[in-house]
Amino acid sequence: MQTVTKPKAKDHESYGSYTALAVLFPLIGLILGVVYMSKDDALDKKFGEHLLAVSIFASIAWAIVWYVFVGMQTPAIYTTPSY
Image (cartoon, rainbow, N blue to C red; front, side):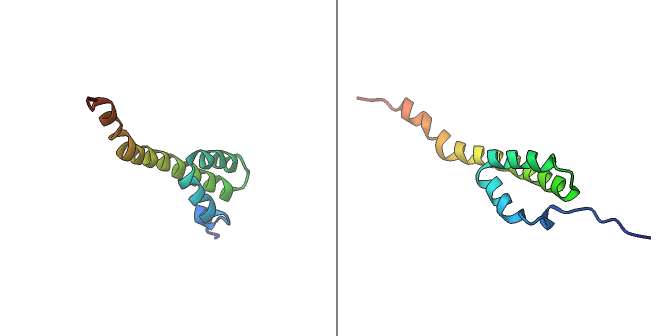
């Protein structure tokens, strides 16, 4: 009896570089994720799912970072009285 192993995204040859790219530039990660999910190989499909998940998480994280460092300080510019 053969055991069938599921493919893991970390087994893909471009795992490290494309994951870092998806974290730094989530839009590129989303595009790469869709491209890899459209391929026939099971490993590529799993890697595409991984890239999509990382890109969505990175987008949310970048939005929070943007809000904390920029969004919370912007209202002070408009409410400061000018004499």
